[in-house]
Image 1 (tube, rainbow, N blue to C red):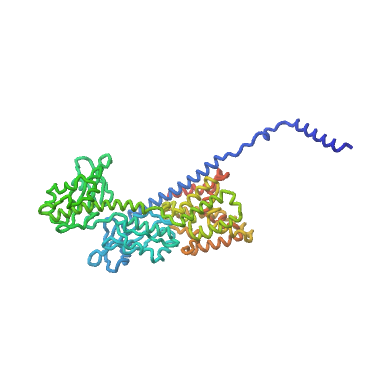
Image 2 (image 1 turned 120 degrees about the horizontal axis):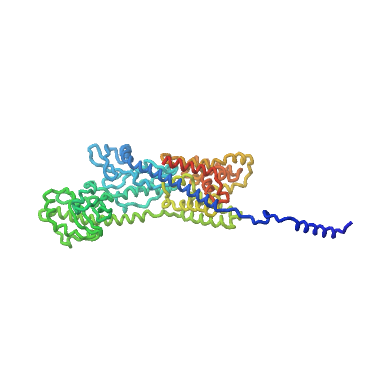
Length: 594
């Protein structure tokens, strides 16, 4: 019997001999090539471009729809105002359309009792949580707001209802004056409907910030005015800027000067019998070249005296409007024309007052640009800290700490959800995609959307669903309940539901459809004091289900999460998915509807 050590040595030798006699296997010895990743990257960016193109189609389709509404809006608006004239008094018997989108309210004796205006279509670009709003404004004889009423809104119904229940919201606009942005005061938005309230306030500001019309001199600048103050031997054209001012361009489209009429600026300085309107021609440098009387309520003989005295107009020529505004008529020893002293001095005062009003209007326009600043609040600051915290926790080892996760989820649910309410939803995503990105009115929510859509593409992490969404955080806190195995099997059959919800939301967002998408998801329930019963019920039911089926809503029902996950870059992104086919179908449908 051989010794065990000898047997072991013999086996090792035989093994070596066997290995030396085996041929080389190149399929084993060759290095394994790593899987190419460029296809997944290209596919991910292709999906992003396709989604962006779909949003562009929705936006252009909505713009076309809004453009058509602009052409038909005025025709349908006056009948609406007639119905609602009881906002001002019971004595209004008739409504007469005027230039500038105003309607004059008249009593039975055809005397004016005030005016009316609508915020649409002027403020169609002002978007709230989901869409624009149309407000009826009743103005007194001084063009000051005395009443306001919301006629219609494309915004979320729950938020609109909160505005309507707030008896202090619309009275805040009383005293705002058409054409006088300086009369606009700060507005306190309705709690729980801040974005909708700010959008309505900005819409009213846009409408009232437009030019104040002249009721005594309503005629706009035209080609006939060129013949009065410009050399028309050359080919020149007048291009109105607004009711007060117009560009004068040559045949090459180059601006060579401007026309300004004083009527909308000053129409209350009377001469012998009434006010006068002056037209001023400015050169390319903004200096007055020629002035002339355009229209007057004074007696014709006095007007003729004025037109026959060129030295009177010389005082106001070759001056910047700022110089005219600072002109001291007494210091310059401006005298009235003999035989028409009152008329000529009224015209001189009108020129100076109009120049001052023009300068003030330019200054007010600059102030209005500053007023349309970003509406940053303390909740937006809190949202910024939430985003920073989510990135830090979600991209470092802190995400593995159970204690930190529990504290973070409690913070997200209690503060970010119930206090700020800056949750992403299908309502806001589709609404802003179709009607505009309201980043100035809701900078915090806009930042959440931008971060949440960029990170899945660039970092392969869907941080919104895992570390930002309050509803997801609440479900994580409840996930340690009793497992419902049969429920999981049943819910797995509904994996199509999130994608179907997302696709349906896009379809109903197309023009001429205005569905309340906020009721399709539980997120509006976090603004519980304005949320609808449907959103609250859905939130409670989904949280209750998550105690038995972990993250039930996120996994089997959330359309918003499905969109973010669709855009997330992963190793399998290069595969053609059913969702890609759905996206192509939506692009085709949107192009057809557009």
